[in-house]
Length: 357
Image (tube, rainbow, N blue to C red):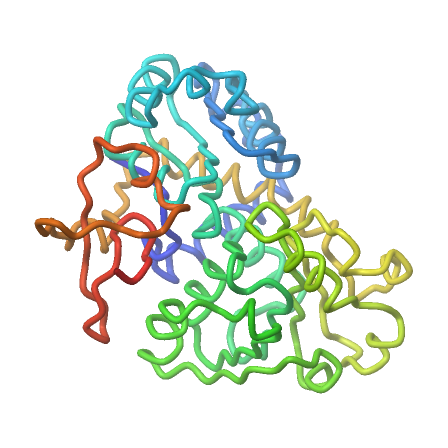
């Protein structure tokens, strides 16, 4: 069955095909207005969302389909203790495709293992966000005309930024990509992301705590919000929340054709004063989300099967070993088997959330 849980389920050729399909949808919307007549999208959002949920709903409606769903955990039986597996078993009886957002890492993967219909990961905690990555890639290709030979700066919360993790995984497979990782020490890119997607394939990258120092070399600047909801220590969040603020003075250091992106929402890390700068395309990026999700829905409802999530297909159980990540789906759904895989460096990691165990 077709699911999209991890961006690496798609090859670069398949990503390119989705991007071209989305461009055709933008150019010829009337040709797609009835492609999903009679189909129903269920949106299961157990965490707040504006852009992702509404763009999924807009995408399905624009294809002629219908939408049903829940916009919070409190409005579903999850508030009564129902498991992800049971929820998706029920909802897949009422729909043809499901988009799920969940605060626990690995929850959409669990859902895909029990669903009768395709499941799309619409963001799982601080782990992955493959459809935001597709949105980002469509934006980059429309603005820059290519994916190859770009220096991409990722700035802000790289530790919990699921959009960052998925974008690194996707773009590391294109030729001539170089990453500049801009963050405080406390919010550096997780080791497993660097090891698997940068060090292992030999993708060049540098790390910096200064945005100004690296600004002149960037082709793409991807700003991120420091996410209050991922912090257990309120004082640490307050200390870090405004560590990077993009304003007019900093933009003077950038190339004339650099683009500024942000998955939104922003909370002070991009000054409103730069919104009208032609290099700032985060609102156009949001618009792209609708069209790439239309292309993805069409693909997943076709007869093209996506490969399994590799870490799960190669996973194993081990007596006594448990994932210690409190944000993992296994931390709250005790009936789940704890499954693990061994990464390229010999580190055993949770198959649901990728945490080293």
